[in-house]
Image (cartoon, rainbow, N blue to C red; front, side):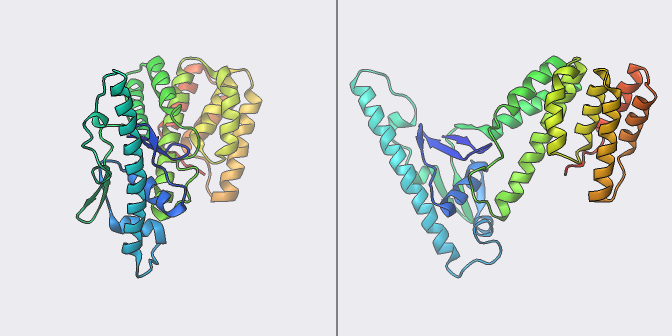
Length: 293
């Protein structure tokens, strides 16, 4: 099974889509796919579908959605089996579950005590791959391997084609998971930019950071990186303007001042501090807990 949720939802069993078009079964599949190979409690699925006000028939209706998903899975398995039979007849070797015919719809979408489990059969998941690559990137950063960190984190971020579950009408559970995934993406993005900064790519980052600070208007790390990139590109006045705009936004929208680390960075730029002092101020800003707007 191949699972993609970092953008539009796409779940394929042996190359055949099992993604439903109806909104409710789509929600169920999305939550199961995100937690593939783990039991998703019935209570979580009901909360996702009906947001704390389930109908009396909630469990029966959920079972109906599961049956609809199994019908799609069964159709996909039939297509895969037919394709395998054709390949075998043509003299091509057939391997895996399609060759044995042992995997059924109930093997893929499993009913267990208290919940359901989507069995990926050892397939791919873009979330798992993102977590793997991002983790390797963070370890490379810790080891001061900035070229490796930049490459790994860029590869991880390339798995995103848009907001998570972009075409799914999410409920309570999916909305929470979408926010969590966005936080992980922002963390990886922040560290990838930091790695690029350490490699002296400040001029190449200016266009990207211009867009990012406009999108995340209270994200202090991104603003700090933008300030430093501008300053290193000989645009000190613009770097200071970025700080003033951020401060105005934080005061107006959140009622808070910029962090002490960001204020130190602003003062360093204002005083045209030597580069090593700016690096220390920037590092302090990047290590601070990020506020995201």
